[in-house]
Image 1 (tube, one colour):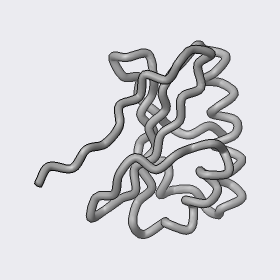
Image 2 (cartoon, helix red, strand yellow):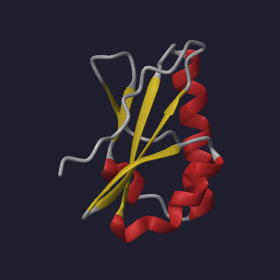
Image 3 (cartoon, helix red, strand yellow):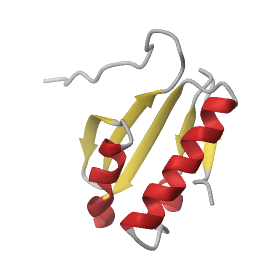
Image 4 (tube, one colour):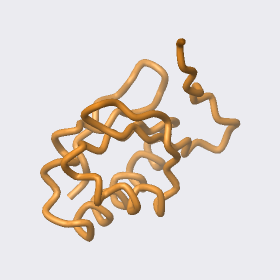
Length: 98
């Protein structure tokens, strides 16, 4: 079953943190992520944003194996992204403000 995601205004999707948290295992998350990526690519989506809840960080290696990169970390989650379109990535980098 694919992950639940909302379309963003840039032609990509934001996976809901709740759908990631509800995965039963690393294997089910990996399968759901693979299915979702195939569907999003077929639909012409571009950037994919994925937040892994702090309580489910064991899922992070599966996201990295699926081609996601770290974007930033917040107290309650790790935020990763992946560009799946056949064009140059337009995903923003992360800058710290000091």
